[in-house]
Amino acid sequence: MKIGIYGGTFNPPHLGHLAAARTAMDALKLDKLLLMPAAIPPHKVLPADSPSKEHRLAMVEIMADSMNLPGRVEVSSLEMDREGKSYTSDTLEAIHKQYPDAELWLLMGTDMFLTLHHWHDPGTITRLAGICAFGRTEQDGEELFAPQREFLSQKYQAQIVTITLPGLVDVSSTRLRELLARGEGQEYLLPQVYGYILMNRLYGTHADLKRLELPELRACSYSMIRAKRVPHVMGVEEEAVRLAERWGGDEGMARRAAILHDCTKYLELDDQLRLCRQYGVELDELEQQAVKLLHAKTGACIARDIFGEPDEVYQAIFWHTTAKADMTLLEKIIYIADYIEPNRDFEGVEELRRLAYEDLDRALLLGVETTIQEMWDRRLPIHTNTLRARDWLREHGTKTEE
Image 1 (spheres, helix red, strand yellow):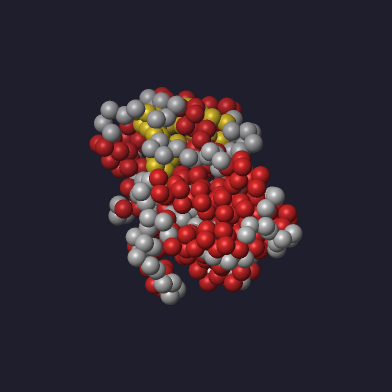
Image 2: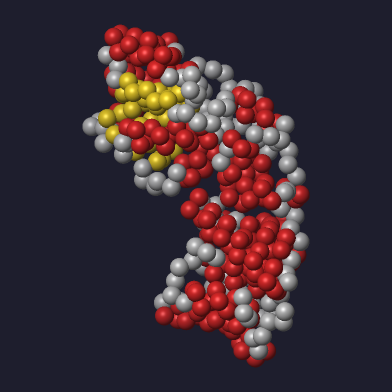
């Protein structure tokens, strides 16, 4: 097994780190990559206003999740859990004990590579792991790498691979922190990481979460969910805006409700229940046990309380899972958009998509009936509000007024 170890302060993790990690995985054909945030880096002093190690770890976990390689990319808290300075030689010793038969590769940037012989115990480092160094710019090429590679090879018999990454995001973490404090620099970050920074007011950011523009709102929403869920949320936003345009709804509110509709999707049941208690949301017996039903309610609460969304958006998110009798236009739009967004692929979805632009109420009835049938087939309980939605639509007709 080939294992790569990519350490650093990740303060913050940016697109350059991500590109380097991906390139090294491909170039070295790694079976596993360990992202290793340092607690106390021995080579530099963390700025006094740096985020806590817990925040840095969380941001690296977001970056790892974005790579969509579960089982192959992991975040290790090994150095953060260890007291004292984060010496790489100690880290490699620990990893070697855990994976005694693995081929280890230590990944690093140009500056670290050129000073490797000054690190603590470079002999142990080069004995336990090969070195993969990558350059951020065109200048970080063979002319710069060759002398150090020859020196390390001769002195330590080091195994070395050097990679130049033309077009790699060329920004230092120091410069990026300065930009973030001025309200700039988001182009160097994953949206999810930027959202996490805004949500936690890191690096001198002070965004008013209740007055966010759409790019910042998306970033915050994406930071709260898994990367694999982001395409769905983007699809729901796209579909909701089209439906609002077709049926004369408020496109702005449809967009914002769609962006936030799944923001608490990945909270565990205990956390969902805690939020329901916090916001005074009354739950029936089924909801107290079904985590999939709760994210609509807690997401609506977060949308209103944290992001300052109006009651119309709150209600649209609140009912997007179960539906209810006598839904407003915005509530219908979010429910159907969630059902038919472009990434959905199930038997009958094309008919539902066609109906959604011909008669929204008929589409809503078909969606509700499809859900009821699916729950029945799976011998799962059907929520009372879903049954009431079906009955109301059947009783009051299904012709949407244009």
